[in-house]
Amino acid sequence: MEQKEPIIRLDHLGKEFHTVNGTVKALEDINLDIYAGEIFGIIGLSGAGKSTLVRCINYLEVPTAGDVVFEGISMKGLDRAGINQVRRSMGMIFQQFNLLSQRNVLKNVCFPMELQKTPKDQAVKRARELLDMVGLADREKAYPAQLSGGQKQRVAIARALATNPKVLLCDEATSALDPNTTKAILQLLKEINRKLGVTVIVITHEMGVIEAICDRVAIIDKSHIAEVGSVSEIFSGPKSAIGRQLIMGDTVHADFGDSKLVRIIFDGRASNEPVLANLILACKVPVNIMYAATKDVNGTALGQMIIQLPKDEGEEKRVMNYLATAGIPHEEVTRDDF
Amino acid sequence: MTFDAATMDMILKGIQETLYMVGVSSVLSYLIGIPLGIVLVVTDKNGIRPIPAVQTVLGIAINLLRAVPFIILLIMVMPITQALVGTLVGSKAIVPPLVIAAAPYIARMVESSFKEVDAGVIEAAKSMGAGTFQIVWKVLLPEAKPSLLVGAAISITTILGYSAMAGFVGGGGLGAIAINHGYYRYELGLMLVTAAILVIIVQIIQEVMMRLSRATDRRIR
Image 1 (cartoon, rainbow over the protein chains, first blue to last red):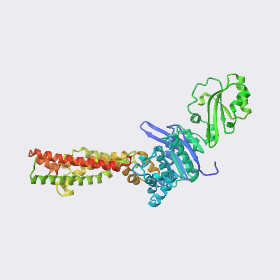
Image 2 (cartoon, chains in turn green, red):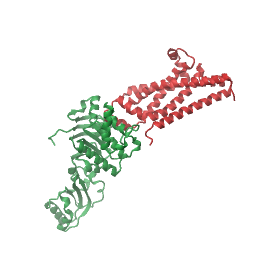
Image 3 (cartoon, rainbow over the protein chains, first blue to last red):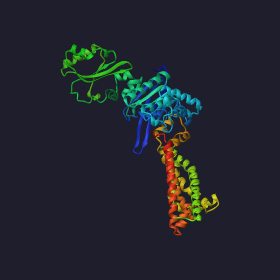
Image 4 (spheres, rainbow over the protein chains, first blue to last red):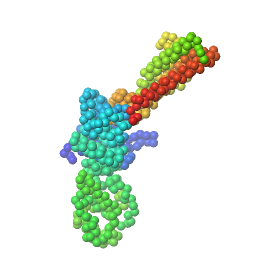
């Protein structure tokens, strides 16, 4: 990834909040490179600091340490006008849509252009193009209160793109929407990324969102970045405890007994083969499936399975040998890993 | 109950004077109160341009003015009244004290209307690079408009109530008639009639403002 300059670089970024109960570290030593044209996901549980992180990118929150570098320009050194200038190159959409309730759809989309004094006829023309693109050309006279959640988010997306930004920041943009609407909005974001080349940064607490559209993902936990990588990498082999938890969910807190546990990783190649059936036939031992999930990540079947081996040491060894010789990616795991 | 022509004339003149006092004072109070309300919200420690020192000083000044009973304020500001309108009697003389009493009240009403504006919408405007003035003019004022109109009904009614005290300092209007004729001369019928007219005026102000607020509020489907 060294061959190109990142469009956004977070450099030892930190953010502290001073409250009556003392200082709270929301972010600490965050280093991230986000490249032009990618869809970058930032996932974490609530309270992990992801919303603060996305607000640091456009300086809605001013970092207390480190720097944000946008297209080679350090934002730390910018004055108010300079920051406003950068913000116009970054669109943002929100969980609660944040449309102006007293303006109709067309005027909402015109709003950012009005702020930068675009001539009105030009702004209206551009707004109509965008509304057409998000599929709301026929609702330009409607007010936000007359729209569904999905429609409101479409208006918000059109509004965020009005000034031709290079980056689109999405703060839990689908978290207030039902599953079908979520799918449609994610599809739209992907289309915008592919067609317009806008770099999209997605903040979410749902792994499904990351799987659906992201190229790369950063997992954030307790104010720190736990791991960063391509979605398929992280999905097939999460290295951090939080990564495993996010990918496997809460299904693995059951009592496993005390025999050995092995995690089999399906990296796409292995998922076409009946790995487990072959293993059982070859080794002639029963194994217990503790957890299994396969997901379609960008057209590749990725997944993992946790199996419990027999207590008998000889049988256990046979299974391990089989996995090694068959070249199936696997690792021994302990209960503490989940 | 019937009144002679002179009394009818007096009542009509009273209505006119009341409307004049309330109208002029309301307009002037809003011209002062809205900017003060904006400053209170914008400079708040969680506002769009926090300047806590300004917020605190302005807040205290407003509370001081609001704490003084109107009838006392009326007397205290007499030098200002004299300087501004050149007289201490009549309907004109009641306008400066009314404005001085109402502007801080309106500032607080405006402040509370602005605080109802969704913080997320302000954040969205900021994310688009909106400056402080643009946020006030294009987000806070239009988004708060329905609430500002409801607040105006309350504020104007309060000014109407204050204006009735003009009678004590030789001002005019319905309040003065009620006091001078109804109270001092025991003309109970006249007092009831002026009170009834005041009630009707309040009803009209309230109804007009509420309808205006509802008709222009786009949050209602």
